[in-house]
Image (cartoon, rainbow, N blue to C red):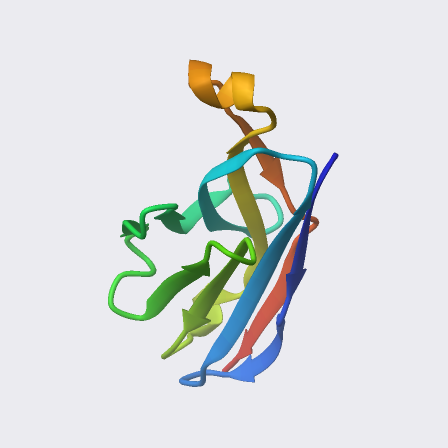
Length: 125
């Protein structure tokens, strides 16, 4: 089993900053990428940012220039530093990890995406 434990959500005023973190644990062989999506009730889940094991990052349009993703491969942790927050950033933020559970899966290029339970970020105006 793989667990993704998110932390750091909360309430912040517009213009403020917040950092959310996610730690992966359990039985797996290799993490390919980790990242963050967010979702507002009634809307589709939106990609926020991702980081590969090699450190390559990419961002959704809403995050570019304001959010920064970082990771620690030794601890299987990913962080999302969010700045200049607006009420439109209010959402549940979900951590995800794309990983190979076994060496055999890794060798064959087979991966599975896991999701965390989500952490709420609320930005007040």
